[in-house]
Length: 174
Picture 1: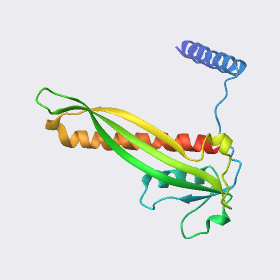
Picture 2: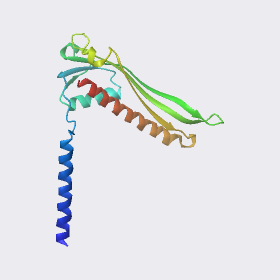
Picture 3: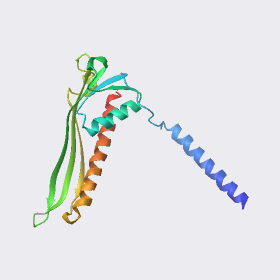
Picture 4: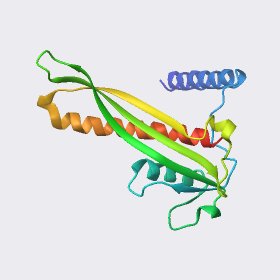
């Protein structure tokens, strides 16, 4: 019985080693932590913005110094301006009686990144002065389950927010 267990564990270890070696040979590598071309950023956004709070936590977790409103933007190497954060709902389909059957949820973000002294930062890398990001999700809707659909809608908006923060962080790292 112990011999069988030993052989099973040995086979599993050999398979793991083979898989790791083949992944390394094809050029696969974990992404790792992002490298930013700056060490400090001033986050100019409404205090009540959940996206701005999540972005601040993410950037601080990556080792950057994040400054907010009481500080002077000139103290930071870059200024991140959150120009717009818009939650939208649109009816996609209706029943023959006119009741909503399906909705589309959208989270639209507009931002600009500039130098701390007011000049536009990395305009070529950003593609334009103002960057617009959009996330959408489809949501089936049933009026008899309005409370659960409201909770699902909040979860979907939170998921879109997390994805947008990840996109912003990837763009800032270039």
